Image 1 (cartoon, rainbow, N blue to C red):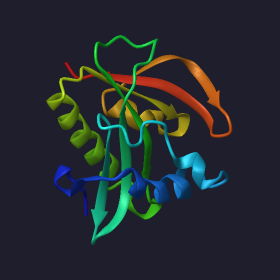
Image 2 (image 1 turned 45 degrees about the vertical axis):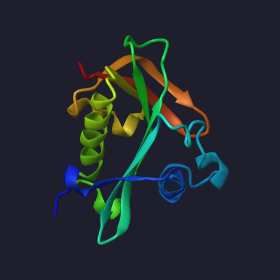
Image 3 (image 1 turned 90 degrees about the vertical axis):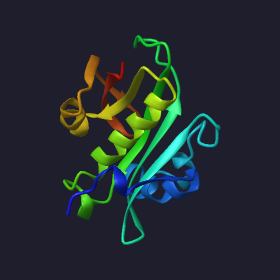
Image 4 (image 1 turned 120 degrees about the horizontal axis):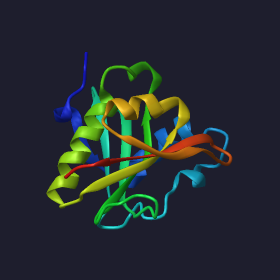
Length: 150
């Protein structure tokens, strides 16, 4: 079974915290899963559900990066999918739905700090890498990546 944008729903910031903690920050406190801007009215969170179980998440936060060109930028943060649901396009459904919403907001560019192990996935989605690999402590090695929407 593969997921599509029809499987994606808007969710609250609070609904993202469990997966952020379990998948992205299991060795930190739950407070490390609360992002600045989570509750800003410009920002939004998406989730994919399977039989009413939240299996994948992504948050889009209005934030500019100084090394990326683009008039209106959003940042993808906290992208995570439960292991049993990976390789079923849940994350891709979130990205595509996110891009639909960003285009409706006249956003021209979105970017993320991609974990090195996920960089190939983001390249397949049409993103471009900027600069060298860098470390975000205590999370690990990352690549700055972006995508132009228009």
